[in-house]
Image 1 (cartoon, rainbow, N blue to C red):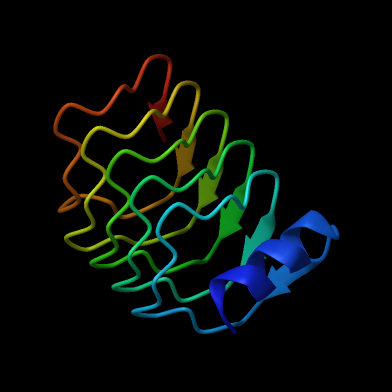
Image 2 (image 1 turned 180 degrees about the vertical axis):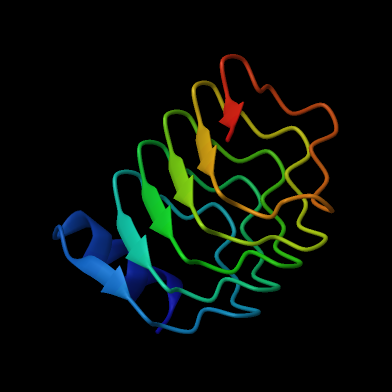
Length: 117
């Protein structure tokens, strides 16, 4: 699946389940409002992407580049991100429930009212 296909599925309102996007070039993609379950984003290039108001459950973001991305009001549930790059991300009111993002980089990220629970 490529960037255009993924974006089209999200815009159509489909729940995205069990796909492998590991290492994909998703730079600047707009998947705002999407619902993702068990999706592998490990090593994906997603700099400048828009994930606003999306829900991610049991997804792998290990080694992902989400620098400069828009994460406002997104929800992450039981996700993992080992060495993920969230530098300069805008994550107002983003929620991380039972996630392991302990080695992810959030340098200069805007985490106003974000919660790691």
